[in-house]
Image (cartoon, rainbow, N blue to C red; front, side, top):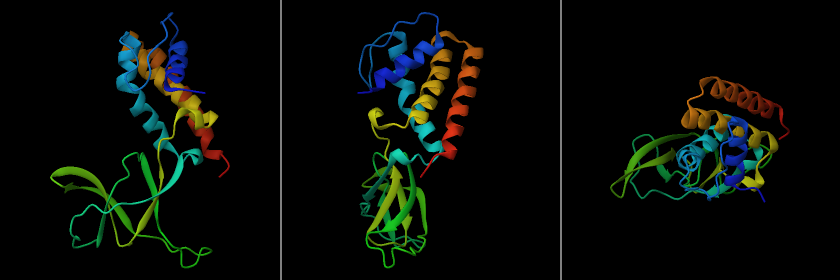
Length: 188
């Protein structure tokens, strides 16, 4: 079973310089310099690579929940953005009138005050909307190219955080981009 700690330690190995491995678990890892850096860098790195392409392994479908706010001038429905959502790709009705010819749904992402808290929301004209979105699944489900892109991106960020090595960071970014680009040609 692959864990976030495995991903961080693989990134640390790419940096070199005999960095000790991280022993703690995500999201806090341990109190080593690498663990402290991973605590800050890991989740944003995974989400950044996750947004780069619509990775099929990350696809999920969820019924959206209304925010409780009244309709706006432009949109009759306001839904809360999925709490584990990295990126919503499309909205779909809960029941398709014609599954062979689904109609596109108009929607927009924004923010609004929900129960006194500024919250990411989705505005749409679709009642009972469902979101097709990236839900950032656990590391054990990751596609091999996605994993390699995350490892290399994270190695780049950790290299700067731990050793201030701009040349290592640049090489990591370039190789991470190369692996992420390979994902463009994946099968759907």
